[in-house]
Length: 171
Image (cartoon, helix red, strand yellow):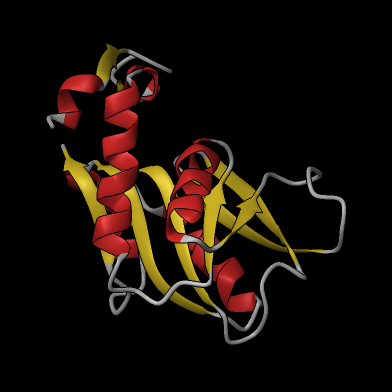
């Protein structure tokens, strides 16, 4: 199946000069969504995974479905102030400023194996921050999985080199 044909390009969003890869059209297509989840699951089959970790918010969409398909737990990573129990926090740099992500301190356990999932990897900052949160748990990061990779932005160079990066579509 051609997943790329199910992704809509929106020029000048969220600001002029940006070509936004809109996954809502993929999500609307039942066969395309099933194919994307099944393809990610197939590519992750060789990894030993205890938890899928998904970043707010599109990582929740693919992450929970993938966790279900793999038969493992799901852990959300959220923006500050959204999680009710004690959290680990990491601050990371954006193109213009910084942001923070949080994960419950009791999410998973030391020695557990974590797979980080999101819809897209661009510059890699969010995924690298999520990896730092996983490290704070005492767990092992076994992989990253993304539906889309924007290759020209070189996001992989910000991720741990020894950890596999799985993508379905590359632009």
